[in-house]
Length: 386
Length: 185
Picture 1: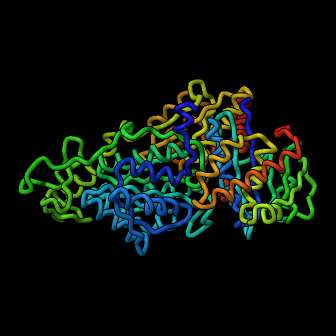
Picture 2 (picture 1 turned 90 degrees about the vertical axis):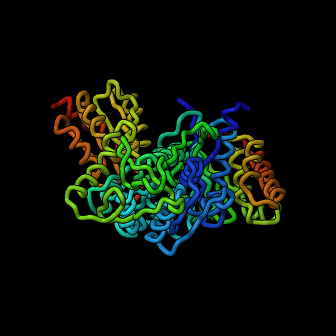
Picture 3 (picture 1 turned 180 degrees about the vertical axis):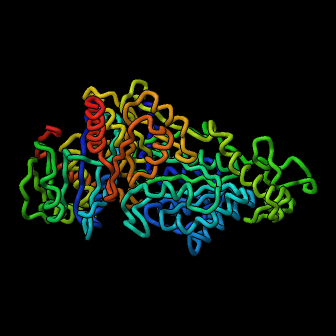
């Protein structure tokens, strides 16, 4: 048997998240199990003790988010996993993590909502919640995998980005990717880049916990290492002490924003398939991107110049990359399992230069490639007759 | 075109169909093929019904759900009623006639075996009917080899149940030998 076959494994999406997170150095998980994310908690409970880590099942989602923040402040890479109803509950503390700049990763395996909806049915209704779920102009990074292997790789990347930028990172999955099992070949240990948060290079007495480096990110001391400082969700100065000074407040929120938006080339990744000469571009993410890829292949086989644009980072939204599409495409289709949450962003990016059509489905089933193919054919006919 | 086979394993909750699907997909991967195993919880899967889907292909598997299966296993009357009609023309419908008394109209070729009864009588436990069925599926379709299926099986079952499960798998292959079919036709 070849090396490649030996390395290939059948793995579930949720399992891949766990393995990726552990490879990135996560050693703390607090959560409250919820379908369709439960396997993540189950496997973390199984795997973490053997690695010297800690697993806690908390009394609810709010407390688990708080525990994750506490663990991270103490210097341990920490993650929690949930689905829509739990994600709603975590929002207050996600805002706290954004404000106090505490690295953490929140996995949301999306299911049909609002409310308890359909626990086992896939949806992509939390796209806007992932961006704006907690109040205020906060920074956040949201990554969206379309395969089991990518769930592994993006779990690592989510941890890395959270450590690098001291920001909550949301790994936005869906039930299809979370529950499906497929063939994966994972990188060997040591082949993946693991990023550690920047530590202070000064003595505790000279430490300003919120004085940023050139990259806009302040070095972070572990709580308990002798660097005494104040952590608060209130607007704070560089010492961490609360203030209502208008200038400090504005500088703070702008820096929180800039530390992400000044590094978009590092934060944003996208994937293109057959885009070079595409006249019809399908934009899709998560499990729907798989239906879209098949639809693009079928469209090509029928002589239609179609292509797929897949945002891997959905927040910050890859505005520049989408705007670029409008220069060559005659039509853009956005396929998603919601009523058009990312379509609005696509429209904003293309600024009316090209027609944007939605393919939407909200019955709890994955959008099929046939539905997307029909849309491709329709816009092709319209473009020809128009 | 890459060769692709789609399986739908259906029956009642507790018959171990998802495990059977996982083992089938695992075996395919051990042979260097691509495989996807997906749960599908449509409204039709309410009540005691259970369904596992597996796609095995030499090529890339984009869309992860079964569209129209080549092979359907129905281990309950309910499952047969729901899925017998949804098989590729010339495909294969395997029914456990321990429980399936009426086979609805189907475009597939039908093979009936008393899978659960034979598991009970010849292996000693009806619990392993899923593994008997798995042996039959592999034997009838040649989708995966017996050797890799055994490896996959042994890696996915609780310790202490190896001989029971291997016996069940062997029975399945034995039963499949009585027929010679090719899927897809």
